[in-house]
Amino acid sequence: MERWVFITIIIAIYLAVTLTIGLLAGRKQTDSVAGYVAADRSFGLLVMYFVTGASVFSAFAFLGGPGWAYSQGAASFYILTYGALGMAPFYWVGPRIAKLGRRHGFVTQAQLITGRFPSKGLSALIAVLSLIAFVPYVTIQMRGAGIVIEAVTDGHVPLWLGALVAYGIVIAYVLSAGAMAVGWTNTFQGIFMIVIAWSLGLYLPYRLYGGIGPMFEGIREARPELLVPPGLTAAGEPWSWGAYSTFILVSAVGLMMWPHLFMKAFTAKNDDTLRRTVILFPTFQLFLIPVLLIGFSGVLFAGTPPSADFILPFMILETDLPPLVVGLFCAGALSASMSTGDALLHASASVVVEDGVMQFTKLDERRQRSLMQALVLLTGATAYWFALDPNSSLVLLLASAYGIISQFAPPVIAALYWRRATTSGAVAGLVAGIAVAVFFWQNPALKPFDMHEGVIGLLVHIPVLVGVSLATPAQDGRHVAAYVD
Amino acid sequence: MSLRTARALTALYFTLSLLTTTWPGMVPFARVEPMILGLPFSMAWVGMWLAGSVIVLWLLDRVERRHRDPDGGEG
Image (cartoon, rainbow over all chains, first blue to last red):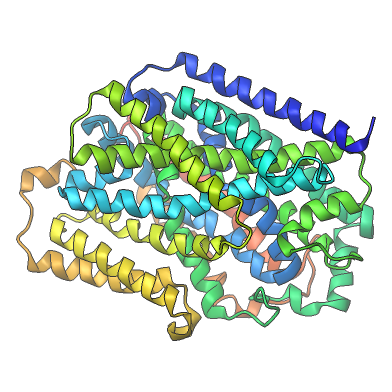
């Protein structure tokens, strides 16, 4: 049998298993909106752990992570730093969000924010911003899936077909089973990703250089600039400490503000599950170490991939690994892509319906669910259309997506912890923060100290939120007491 | 250990982690030597803070559990 046929069969088996798990998972769930969006708040520790971990680790981590290590060296260490920092506060914040969710029936982030700060406009603004941040993120996952499949099948399965099949399956199970399918497929995919990353991350350095130590000693001799933070930019120039540090900051603040992750707090069975998910999350982060080792193993390797992001498939194909390993790797990369893509598609539809449409018209539960399903399809199709365009500057958009998403943090924290915060303050802060972030994203040369535009946005956002809140009348004490203990 | 102390120590750990993995606190540790477990020093440094956070959060949880109602609600 030809090599690519064998690999294609492994991928097909993997996709079939994923589809089966996704479709079976939905059978245990009710037909309600709380069922579709929040899986009837039923996730135990195992599913919560993988649903959180696998949703964070996307095609970007699996392909982009090694790409950064390969071309920008120590700049990639920032990826190791922010996860635990961003997640730790959720040990306390998570259970509070979950409690409010149970008390008021919230299933989305904007419902929590506008529960405390009632404003239809604010709700719609959050829905629109979430969608703007989501589409490029989904597109990257699709492109990642398509490119991996195209690479390992020697071009026999082109990008458009690979992405179409992989995401056809994702859309099928997200449509039929919602949050429950996302949860159970992510568990399967998460286990897959961890095993593949650790095996390849340890295997490649040994196979090529005789160990991790000898590999880094070699890089130290040939390319010492790669091993010292803050590393290099994509263009190969030295990166700035200002950018390195604020990338960590904005990612830590933004991490749990991604609606698809934030909403996970509403899916947990109980508070203990949520707290343990937070405690175990850094163990999932450790999986980035082998991912970066894979990238570093390419530095001294003869030959150059078509672009840094493809260093992983390139190394796999160039080192003559057995077809079984190549097929499994491909399944691992697809896991990373699909486990994030499904959560994104599911969350974007839920957010647009609950926080956008439902603010302005009333729909019964069945119509809401149908509309969400239509939106999953529509968002998927939009992202697919972008994924086929090789010239779209989506990587740029994704980098700024964190700038947008991190602006959700101040209103969430104010809603939960600051009695004196007002609706006007929350709206003014969010608008100001977004405006500043977008301005500096458009004018990168003006950024002070090369800071990430999201951090500059927060530096304006927080004083505006505080100032406008103090300048407007305080909220009714009984209303506030329902949110702030 | 009291709940207060445990929370303060956890906050201290994560504050230190942020300060020594960003500018300017990371500058003294942004180096290749000495290599640890074959990794360049700076990579081992950020990896160490990550691994440490698993232990710190686990210890925090042990204390929090002891102070919580048996039904798992806020204590």
